[in-house]
Image (cartoon, rainbow, N blue to C red; front, top):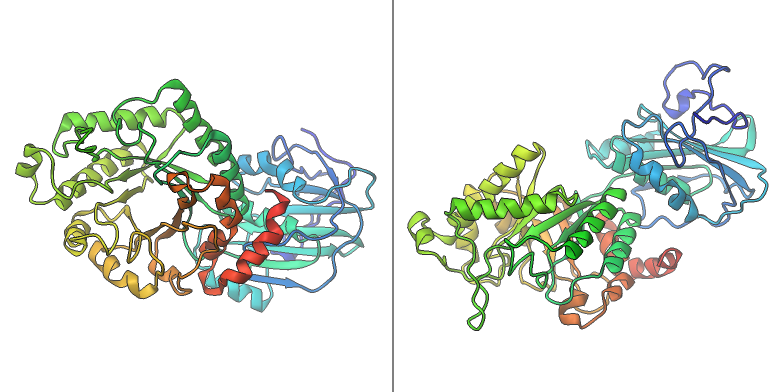
Length: 489
């Protein structure tokens, strides 16, 4: 164990939510987690000159004093967290996002996670109450040390490792006395690689995941239509080179506490010129082929899965299925439920994300399909929906009423935005309460009309809306993103 003799002791402060416990005894050293573990020490000398902008902006931020304008030795203690390995591994990158000076230091900045909620002002406490039981909620309190105003002391509280990561990113962005209380309005937030066209390269996908992590997005859904092992050759195992790409993406997502979902699309029957035999929904043998493919992908480090039954014929293909099911919706519900039951045996917390055939209001027969699907579908399955249209110019909360009622759950939006590199627009500010999630397809890559990197120019606006639609303004968001993005683009 490596400990620092030169770090000022952080006494337990009731005003920071540590209750009435006694200060740490003089003989007990504080273990400052930075790179190796919660007990490892690696101080980094930093010059916290201009605070990094907080983007997306937090729900509540109160700054009463100017920043500390001196060099600070920054130390971070994650030992109070039940899970902190991912955060510890990311600490060098988190610190590198601020301007650094590795020379001598004249002040100390100590950031420490608390095991109990922080004591907050009445206004901040009201915001914490509004966060309810959200698993990604967090609070940050930074103050000058009572004994030395050149020292900053920060306490952070979160109820999950992901929330703790968000807390630390926010705290490091504001090297001055501050109170932050924050949580996202939408549970599932992120991107879909689900377009027609060249899939992202390994480096493009990794760069996208890195940006998503800094924007506090939590889900990446992999399902490019032109990955043959996802769709046309769904039962064929990935060859070694393609398998490595998936393993790399899953590992990068895990490193950044982003859920990586791999999707399979077994219902595609090809074209008249090149027909393909799709899955037989009533076949045990085909279900074994499906789960065998999933297990290959699970072996690459993927733990979460999705089932795509979009862009396929509206009719059942096999005679056995026509005899077994009264409708396509019933056949789809059967496969979705059976797959979820299988996944729950592997992981009791598994939630399957699915796309049905009638995934928008401009698809013929969409009310009937979803009216049948909803009551048959297990409640722990999430359904993706593109909105009023496949390419929806607007999505309003009122648009959700019918589809949520038919499916008997809050849908997750699959937003096919954008086809041009412009800020997200046309989504109502009151949409959050009607949704289980909001995911955006990387449509700029559709048919290779734009390079994947074009998405990055507007990526922040997507995350800004996801975090809190009630405050979203497309023009302001894009301008803020343009000022913020160069820090890591």
